[in-house]
Every structure is written in structure tokens, then in C-alpha cells.
Image (cartoon, rainbow, N blue to C red):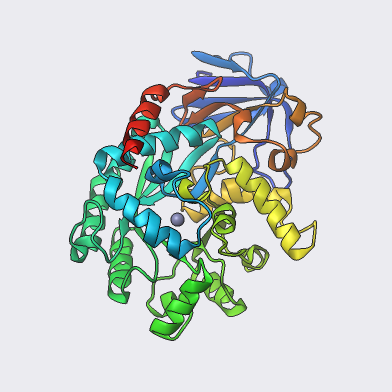
Length: 435
Ligand SMILES: [Zn+2]
């Protein structure tokens, strides 16, 4: 049997069964970018060979993590303005900083920095929403990370779209340029929010996304202030408002969903809309805690997101998993709330489902794309390894030693192979000189 890559002697967590079962000593064979077989070493055919064999003894192989929401270029604003409420942070710091610094060069290099950070921490798929999104897509393609890249739509002059009347058209052209262009990129539309897009803009954006069979992302019900604003302007709540405009369906990803009542959760569930939860960003901006237990109980697909690293301030989904689990336990005063297995699902197959990519990624099984990460278990904080729950409560991004995306090794022994990371950091430091 001929393969491109053969991983041997690895502990494997396929996450393809109801139980988070481990294969103690197993193999994974990869050919043409996909997983061709996996199982215990005893089942590895003697004839198996590959140009590249990775002896992963002492390591755990698991599906690459899926970050369902970020703004990669905002890595330039990491630590620029901390400890502020969302509206002050946005209006007095982030929007002015963006006006001063955002151009194609900034978007490209800061997206490469974000991609490096994510790959080093085991993220293999990311959903991004920003402006000049072509440059994000170029950066992600160069870095070899799988992505859903969504062109921003907002009713203000924006980078690359000085006339807001052209915002939806610009997003439509963006989708046309990237749909089917390469097998790592899925283009989409990102409406900033119900308070920065008019009803007409929202409806036209959704109509365009439908016509082009693309997802629509939107920040929704993030803060109490937003709920008050929508109540004042439209005499209803954010989810009811979007529902009345016909925005919610299975291809709509609602980001945050912190301030929902029970009926709004039902509306979301009925519509088939997906949720991206970003607990660390919600904590840092003091926005609140999403009612995740109820959202999950309603059968809604939920993915985990870091949000932009200006409001986090890292893109490490391992730390996001740990924090998400513990936050909901302390909120409910219930240690059984959001168990580690549920969190692991959110960061893998749940995220893949939210992004419409569950047929391709999200777990390790034959036929799926080979998006695989190897974690080094031979470290004090990961011993003994009784159970995969430890990945949520003890592992961190720096434990990831090797990352394979679409059957290609993009990081090996913590060295990124798809870009010169020193060059990228130097470029970003120079861009930061304007502040
Ligand atoms: Zn966001």
C-alpha cells in the first residue's frame, strides 16, 4: 500500500465515536491529502510504506482544532488597548487604530503572524472575518492553513471599500474570486453586527450569500448595550430582529450569542443557525457569559472561537477550551456543566459543523482530510495520561509538536515550514511603529 505520510506508534484520539476512545499504539496513513487508514499497529499491513514516516511514540494524534471566529489582521492590535468596555474599546481605540494602519501589506503580514500563532497551537482550520480579505486569503494560502475567509460588510467607509454603498457588491466579488480557487479556502461574508449594518445591508448580504452558496457570519447579541440599542432602534431583541429580516438559516454563523432569552434560543434552533462562542473575549470585554448549556441542549451546532487577539489576547484554542469549561462550571455552580468531552467536540467536529465543513474535517476517520496534530505527552504536566479530558484541563498550545493540514506537514518539531517566522515578526514589529 503506497502512502504519502505514515504516522506510527502514536496514541490516537480519533474523536469519531460517541466515547472519546483512545487507540493506545496506532498508525495513521495519509495519501492525496486525506486519511486512507488508521488503527492499532497490529493492523498495519506489512506492505505499508511511505516517503515520509513519522515515529510518534510518546505523542498523541488528534484532529486539528477549529477556530470558528477570529480577525487575523488584528494581531497588530494585541495589547494595544486593554481593560476597556466594548463600545469604548471599539470607538475610541480599535476603529481609530484601524483607520491609521490597515492596508493590504498590514493585513497580509499580520494574518501570517496569526496563522503562525494558530498553527503552533494546533489550530488547522480558522474562520476569519475582516476587510481586504483577499490579503488574508493570500496569507492563509501561503501558510497552508485551512480557512473560511469572510469579507467584511459594514455601513461605514472601510479599508478597500471606501463607499459603503458598495460593501455587499465587494463581498460578492470576493466570493467569486476565491470560490473553487484552492482546496484550503472557503470564501464567505462577514456582516459586522446588527448595529453597524442597516436592515437593507443585512438583507442584501444574506441574499448574496444564499445565491453564492456561502456562509454569512455576524457578531450577535454580544453585549447588553447592543440589546438596548436594537431595542431602541427596532423595538425588538437582536435574534428576533435578524429572524424578522430572514437572515437566520443553516448557513448563518452567529458569533457570541451572550444575551439570549429562552425563546431566542428556540428561534436559533428552529432556523438551523450555528453559534460560535468566544468566552475569553466575552470575559475580557466584560460582555457576559453565553447560555451555552441551553444552546447545546437545544441541538444547536456550537464551535469555539478566540475572536481577534486584540480582545483575548492570544489565539490558543487549548487555553480557550480550559477556560470555557471552567467558566460555565463556576457560573452554574455545577462541576458537571460542559464536560471536557463536550468542549473537545466544540473545538473539533462542532466547529467543523458550524463552518459547514463536517464532511471533510473535525475527526480522524478514513476519507476525511488529513488535518492532524501531534502532541508531546512526555512532559510532567501531561503525565500520567489517564483520559483525553487532560487535553482540556492540562494541555496547552505549546504541547503541539507537529501539524499536518490537508496531508501536508506545515509544522514539525515546533518549526513552522511554510513561512520564515522571523521575517514575519520583523515585518509586524515595523508595522507597529505607527502607534
Ligand atoms: Zn469578533
